[in-house]
Amino acid sequence: MLKSTHRFLDSELPETPPDHALFTVIPAPMECTVSYGGGTAKGPDAILKASDQLELWDGHSIPAAAGILTADTVDVSGSPEEAIEHIEAAVAAVQEGIPVVLGGEHTVTLGALRALKKKYGAFGIVQFDAHADLRSSYEGTPYSHACVMRRATEDLHLPLVQLGVRALCLEEVEARRTLGVTAHDAQDIVPCGLKTNLFPDNFPEKIYLTFDVDGLDPSIMPATGTPVPGGLGWYQTLDLLRQIAAFRTIIGFDVTEFAPIPALHAFDFTAARLVYAIMGLISEKCSPDPAQADR
Image (cartoon, rainbow, N blue to C red):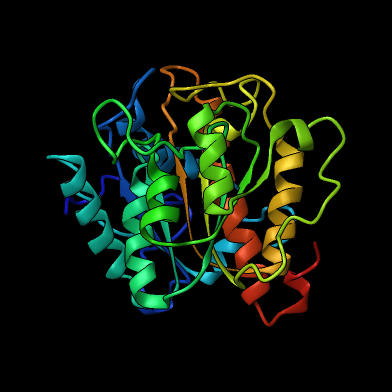
């Protein structure tokens, strides 16, 4: 572990003891298998610094009131397998509350899923992404960011719902069928909104939320290595997140593939705002105060 240089909402919050934190933010600046634009190693630090510009009141509640702890930065040097193991250990160390992993490339999700699989057993995954990430192997490794959902479904046997995908190969089309993946692609959501049930029958009540920022349209989030046109809008995304939080219990989440663009800090702030918005939806559901549940 490496001492984090910045805490989430450092400018607004005193250091939070672990037993008073609903959220533990885990920076994981992994950049081992990126295959187009780079820069994900700088994502976690940029998000943490941008969080200083957030308002504590998010328009509906104060998510920070539930307690936010920022853990040490995960050592992601070495091979992808070693980085995944270190991330797994960092997530496993969160005994209470919600782990929030800041990537780094999307491969970081596998470490979190392994840790939570051991803790909870069965749960589902909801993935926001421009890509299916269901390849068996990519550029010589099964631990590529393009394979992370294949590892989750095929190796860990976790059910998956995908939202906003708009770039996938024929191998992934077949993998969706054989692995029973539920998909609401961008073409099904963006034009007129989601018209079908988000979750299939018998989808687990507990879910892990993984958010690749390229799920957002490049017009609002170009700061990512593999942008694809036709993505989700900001309020469209928040509406989907509200539905997820309303009908399922989120046991952990990540925001990945953010690659900051120098001097264009609007996108750093967008990523930080996304993290805080998800915290808000979780904390409101956990809060006994009805005044904080008005959404």
